[in-house]
View 1 (cartoon, rainbow, N blue to C red):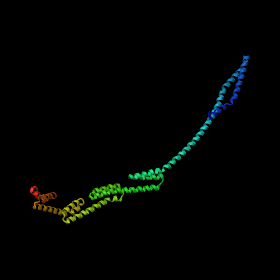
View 2: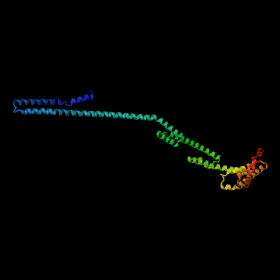
View 3: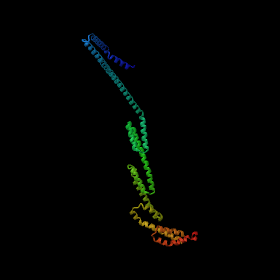
View 4: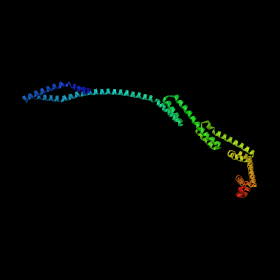
Length: 337
């Protein structure tokens, strides 16, 4: 038997100890009264029932009250035992509360220790994330991570260094993209594709509206266009001056998309002179080829006159001779000559 059970047994046995001698004595007295009364009844049945009745009542009273008294005494003992158990439970609860508090403090210390242990890993993770966002060109996300780094670890100097690196990388990336588009624009300007060049400049401006170089691109393209136009005009005047009709006409065709209506009108007389000179030269070549019986050359020159000057009088005259010239050009003798 364990200690609490033994103690409870002792308390239970000692609780009704006061009954151990009172009720046996009373029981003996009641039995004596009952015996005397029974004897008197047997001796004289008419006059001695009182003593017998008293003995019966005494025995009944002892028989009824003894269990009740014993039960009351036991209940008082059980109450004391319950109080002791409650006290022990209370003590145990206090001990458990103290233990839980110690465990909680230990867990808190463990969490802090983990936080300190993993702090550097968290810093490295954010550093890697910042560089990954920079590599993808996600500049706003990189800035947000730099702000998070400063808030989480309180390292403003390192966060500022990240921001400076992000700004530098973004500037490099921006200039690289601008340089790529500028190279495309340069190619368009060399090919005199001015509309395509302007379109590329406008698209670039929507992406980088605050860049000075991008803002100046349309003006730069127009300056190049005007410079090229000036060169063409100079080449035109030089070709006219040396009577280079073919070169003059070719340059005039290139100038067509650059000239304003006023500029084109001012050049009409000179242009007419060039075309007239060109036609005269072709007519002279055509006539010389016929005189020298160079029928194939005459056919080629006549076709050129008809193609380039279809509405001229010379074209009509050439048309009248073309059938005869083609026939002679196809003859074997002419071919061998």
